[in-house]
Length: 157
Image (cartoon, rainbow, N blue to C red; front, side):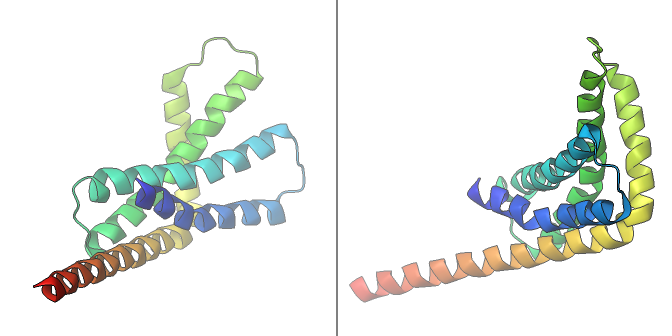
């Protein structure tokens, strides 16, 4: 689980790049704007961490291909969930007691498609690069630990 959260933290700079882009190009800072930035940061940590745990960590299959796939899939789903988190928090700002979940899911899908078309050329390769490098790091670290344990066993014998 630690490795999953660490992978989520490694994916945070991709979300922060979107926040920096929004800060540069948007001058009206109201409360809903900050909620959207928080939604981006939360989604860029939580979604890749959950996917890393689900696809790689739980099955104990560390490979560069899986790392790249998790990174790209995490970037795609982070776009969707950042919009989903924001729209759910925004509806609570309007004092609506019942959130229309189907509308929120459709609107999040539409927003994620638009944001993927605008930022996907940056976020998808970065997510794949981070996932592949982190999978390679974990794989090499596990091999070094196994070699060290084997050397310790041979010293005893």
